[in-house]
Image 1 (tube, one colour):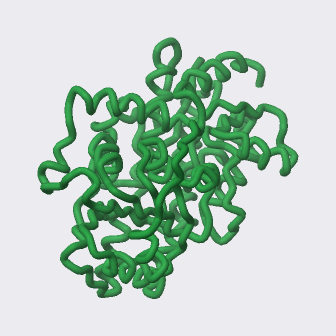
Image 2 (image 1 turned 45 degrees about the vertical axis):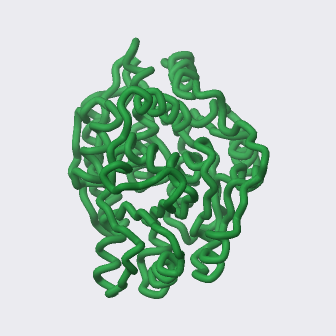
Length: 356
């Protein structure tokens, strides 16, 4: 079986790391990096930290408007698919890379498998929501992380090819914890951090970075917290902070992005997480770190229902108050599978190979 895999952003590198390890034991994979995250700190360091094979193809698309970026990816992916003629195109999540891969494969009648299918924010103003909806409706195999995701697909009339496999990010997290037991991370010691004595913040979504008003709300929230905040800064966010002239107080420490193992260690050691990242919400839950989600909604509703995650938007006063008062639930149920999602994904792909 030959599979062309499309990745382009940090969360996709994480997910692909688990599936690639399982897939390459018996099958052929052509790994295509679109270049959506194009600098070393956002891309190369993550490949290194995850022990993900280097990309077979790097399209080098880089940062552009949504239309221009997606068009360039579509053209590049089409060329790869025509050359490789794979049995499946494998896509992850909800980025422009996901959308471009789904469109390219569908027009060439190449079967599409979507990992992390069925997620919905029900906010069509989010580019990610459009991407995931289109990708799901073009895919023949849909790998869902939760029963909620399966239900969302059913409500849209998608019932064929739907498989509840759990979340491949849990596979990678378990792998990372084993690595960290043998090779401890260095960022915490380098920064002089003590366990549960800091807050970790990650902000990158357009709803929080694209306008001065929204970004200032987030900055005011961080400035209003009276404890140490560690803030690995996404290039988009760093650019916006500079563009809008936002000033962060000394207790908010901006650091460069870190690799996956270092990030897992930072999440595990934090007292609390402030994030707009879906992946970090889940990692916080699995590592038993309380989380405030700086968005108006979340796709990972199970973490909220379990009492370990609160959706707070970008209300500075609410974030400030909850950063000191939020106490997670005493119970911590298992969510998103058993850590074998990658194996299940490959098993389903192999079972459907050749069926068209």
